[in-house]
Length: 333
Image (cartoon, rainbow, N blue to C red; front, top):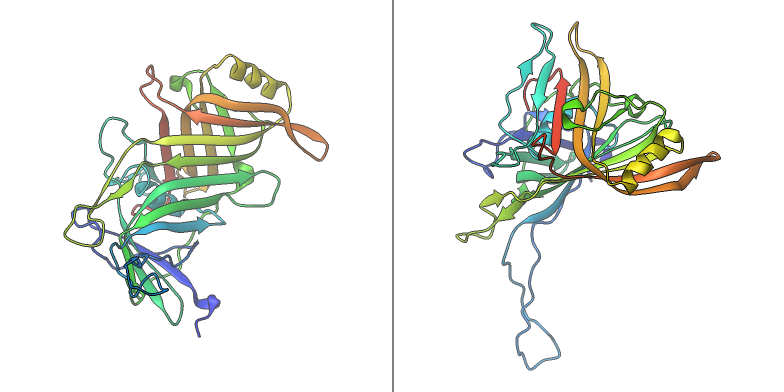
């Protein structure tokens, strides 16, 4: 009998020229993943002259519609993998400070061209059974944080995959050393131009947030088999839900909501320093407007709070909508 104690999730980056062809895992994933189904058998409703609808099942297609990756305790070293299969792939990290292993990753997606997102092979299993998924790419990524809850940032990706099969774990991988993403360290910046994004910190305002990024990635089928053979891209979408302190600053943004004022919002989550170089960090910059804002939309411990939904859209002046940058001590996906 398999033991939950020995559950493991591992992944490896597939070759750019051979997406969907399995590779050995190169890293352990310190989150969780279930074992999804890649097929739904069809029972044809033939005329059998019986009080039975069908006499057999057929297999017409293999595809994993939803493969969920969750990281309840987010860490910076997993971000390059998640963003490379969501927003932009084939990225080469650059060392920011010589000999300090502080690597900058830029995942800002192009809005006018393909983003060449990476695909991955995943291994999921325990001490008895192991399963292999290929051509794993992310449709959606959520990043969530709540201040004052003694918690890390939570990460969750909804992915698709080509198929699932029995396998054996790639052996010899070591548990990674990580830097946690602490929710209480989150900073919120709000500015009125894309050029000034990340300039004006808004302390004393953010209570919690949920950031959702939709990649527009989807599987494609062109015959010659039961499985997908390629993928496509469509619209990128981004939304940020926030709970804000019900103070005069929040009231000012409520006025902006009424006036449909656009803003550049930056979420920054810093970590500790990498050697004598930069700190670990994640920054996400959005251009858009508050689509909803409700004063006194919730309360906590007797404090009235504003609830808000900020929706990203294209800024013709800055020629941008979304920018994502990561710094961590990991130089490869």
